[in-house]
Length: 77
Image (cartoon, rainbow, N blue to C red; front, side, top):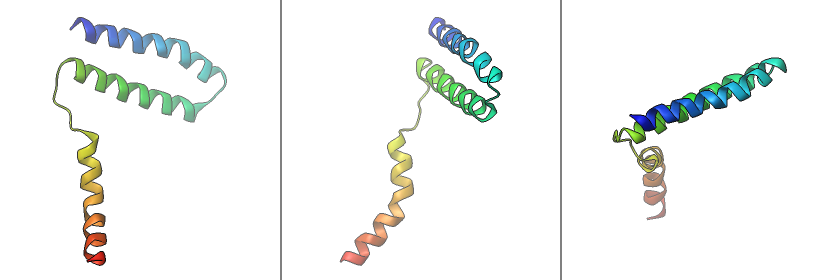
């Protein structure tokens, strides 16, 4: 629980440092990207600390490329 609080505090500190600059420069797309990536990274970090089982990126890559791999394999036989 303490690690989760530390992650949230770190994310908030990063936001406090970066968001005013992005708002001042009127960089709205960059602000959206920063916010989305920070939220995604913070969420994944908290889930990791709480030992929630997360799927491996390898599983998604294998799922996406398996049909293409099958077609190539059949073509080369």
